[in-house]
Image: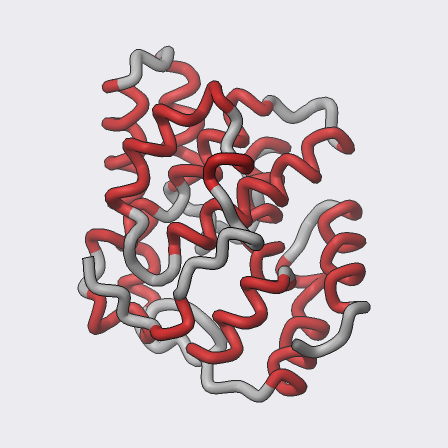
Length: 207
């Protein structure tokens, strides 16, 4: 599939499926992957999965059987949004929130179908689909599981691959992008550990 953003080159040292995705989630990841070859989502999803694994030990009330599959599936719905319109549906200059919402509703549908194909139980399918359906636009998290999925997704912005890719596609200098990220920590992230990680990434300075 066409890669619309020249900044999406895959860098194995930053996000490598072979070492990032747990064995128990490999089949799920392989089914999700065809839906992720757009908007840098193949890289983004692996980095978000890494962030979720960093967050989970700090929140024992979260269920990794829900959180990690939801992270792997949260952006599959971008495959239903025309690539020519992606830049209008996310980021600091978003102008088409309807398309952002479309990726959530389509993502929930695709996620539920993939989980059903893999024989995942109905309760887990329903919870994952509910998390996907609103992970960007819902004002408040549904649960701790939802909270960690949202934080893992947004922590991507602060990681080395996230800052490199996003600053390019948003047309920001590293310093401008750094300032935008720093200003967003408390409004974007919910958990103390996610905020700590974001500040730790930013402590390395603009990249």
